[in-house]
Each structure stands twice: as C-alpha cells, then as structure tokens.
Image 1 (spheres, rainbow, N blue to C red):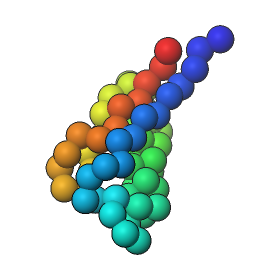
Image 2 (cartoon, one colour):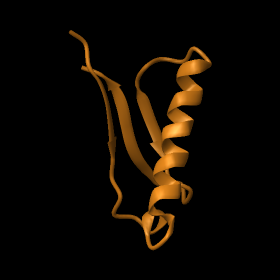
Image 3 (cartoon, rainbow, N blue to C red):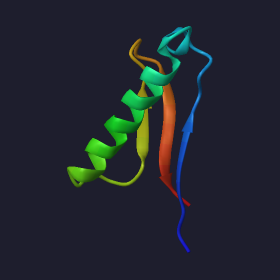
Image 4 (cartoon, rainbow, N blue to C red):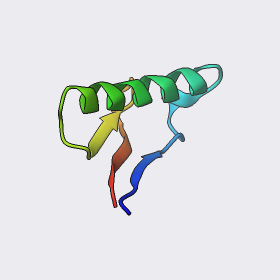
Length: 59
C-alpha cells in the first residue's frame, strides 16, 4: 500500500498567533491545487515569508 505524507514545520513567524490555522490551510490548498493540475505527487511548499516549510509526497 502506498502512503501520501505531508510534513509542515511550524516554527516560523508565518505560523505565529492567529495565523497558524490560516497558514496551514493555505499550504494544504496549494498542495491540492498542484495535484489537481496534474503535477507530481511530491514536492515542497514555502510559507508566506518564502521559507520552505513543507514537504509532501508518497512513501
């Protein structure tokens, strides 16, 4: 069985205060948009400040 994983580092300022849930949702939407557009099922995502904070893919 193949698994799909998402790992998000949330130590950056982009996740501080009330922005935590909003930034998580934005990252998950970006992954979903990429998958729906037919892009590879693996990659990375940057937070709103440009820091690479997310890796996703299959195991």
